[in-house]
Length: 531
Image (tube, rainbow, N blue to C red; front, side):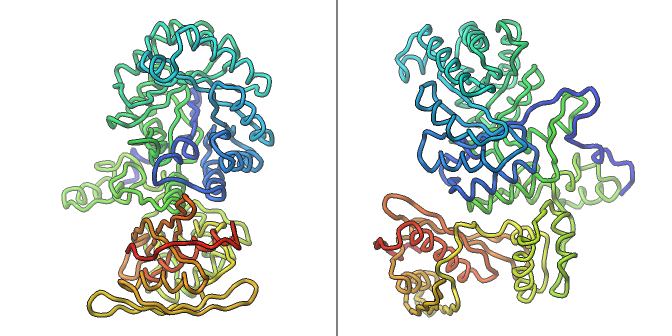
């Protein structure tokens, strides 16, 4: 390839004279509340740390008044993160505002995000409030919030389907009451880029005091236009974009953070703005989210999908060999991909492992490196080839909540003609006890689940089971994700191994350990027959 490569100039670092667009990530709030993406407190904290390293400006950590668990997660994130603004969502009611203030009290930089619907449809059927009552409620809530927060954001829910003149009136009142950011959500993914640009331009002309506030946008993807609408808003003057890693979120999701950021960077000459993100951490952050939720990244996903920088067509390959700019507008390294395949082996040392992890965007401390190195040596003994994706799987590791008290010491499983299977397991408890059991089932995985349930005295009611390859090659690592129902809650467990039966066993043990730690004496009634 030639040295003159237009894709090599792509960067998300603000250039001289470029205006800054704030990136507001709501993966932990809007994204996490979507089916299939629920995360526990430890998982949320891990993703929050990754978002901080990525360089997002605002992290919406959750909805503190939604539940005790959400409150505790927001508080834990507020206590640990020092660089970004940590934000909590609240309705325009006193109780929500007080909960936000308590949860965010430890934060170095904090914000409250108030929301109230403004469209005719919502005013009539959801709120049963007049136009005047909505404005009064918004102003009262903002004034109350200002007693606790210097940084207040106000969202007009369903803003796109709100009368433009009335929306301008609402935002004028919100800014006068003390809101520093006014958000224009396309709550149901209804608008188009042209309409979004017109709406932002209208608000810039008609909202009183708009020069004292930042205009934000929050677009949903119901028509597949969330990123396009967000970019149209930026082009028209919005200076904050609310988005999520991978575009996760309610229904069809939100604007994808990585797509927005790389569009602004790749087409900087058109937008004239920049973000402060370290785009090399986009792919590692997306991989972490995938590991934490058990949801795979689509191969054809823009920017972070496995095929985003893959070229199979002969014509494309010929063009790439002549000049990479023929078919690539970004370098894979710019978003955290590495084109290296075989990188390390069983004879490699800690220093080489640390250097390679750094190249992939991971910077573990000494204790974390020791744990990764131990797992790496075990994996290197079992695999002929160790790929970058293997190292990423090791680096994101296992949810800290999944540690003990039971550990898998021995596992044997086999399948039989007719579809049946048998399994034997030996578990060791952190207090030194051992438990051995065997079982038969409808295949080896079913048998493993039954055996583990018997060994720990708890049956497992399986509600969901998924399997996917994390890495490449004939000896690839696989991830098993399963759901277990317990007391009206569905808990997820995940296990990673080159042996998928072992991965399923580790996933089942993770769930069982969570249940036991939460209620050591409580019996669990379940079924292990859903494979």
